[in-house]
Image 1 (tube, rainbow, N blue to C red):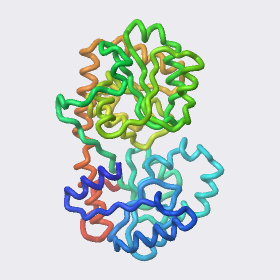
Image 2: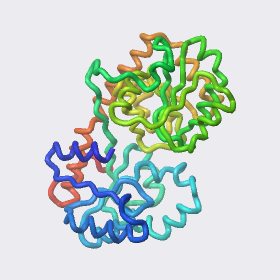
Image 3: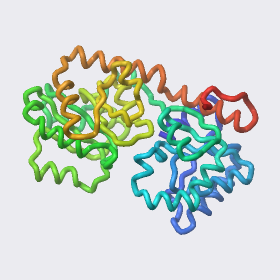
Image 4: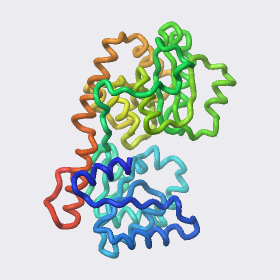
Length: 342
């Protein structure tokens, strides 16, 4: 995501560098990261995410006169803050609160994130700038999906694409699917779960319970991810917590009808007719899953087309690049107050 934003920013004339901390030794990471950033002599620093070295060096950068923008990416929403609560409370009190306070502006991805930021007491500027995606060209040809040969070509695929993390709602999704096994078989549907992060626990559950018509695959990137989206029939993300999920935006860009929870922070997808609203519980998921299986091809295509229009109109990388450029100019005293500020 950061790489794509950087590329889009370069296309609108910004000189952008990307500095990560992951390759630096852990025992001196903060110090080395600060040195590396200072060597670049940036006019502004845009920090993505929380709880790690980039935010810990933010106060020092701000004190040196470098404007800092922090994008929490959903890490301040109530569910995320409640996860590992005592650790986050400790870190928040030790340095994260000071880092956020030092920022010249926070970037929120959606209206719900603005509310979460304000609820924590941040009174400074907040810019509402969503992520973007690159919509594929109409009829773009992708490679065969990784499940080719394992799922009959005439069958339909409901795709989950992302981290195998409890907040993604995978456990209730799989439980709901297991309850609908007969309906899925009759309607020719499969659930394909693509990603990583649970050390094989999901596959072990499927093997143990002998769950039918569920396929778990490893992570897919680049062209292989495009092949998954091109080969799927619909997309599902029943999350408990999100910022603004890239996977959902990408699915809509590929004209996939979606099943999304309200926590995905895409209410426009529901009003546009691009997605069915789901609650991340096994009992509540059953109804929308049945509704999807009952749809004919024309209904699914209408939903998919609505999603693609929504992405093209509101979630493109050029729009995100222009909005961040306007924000940077304002923070550096080189432009008027941007419309993204709330």
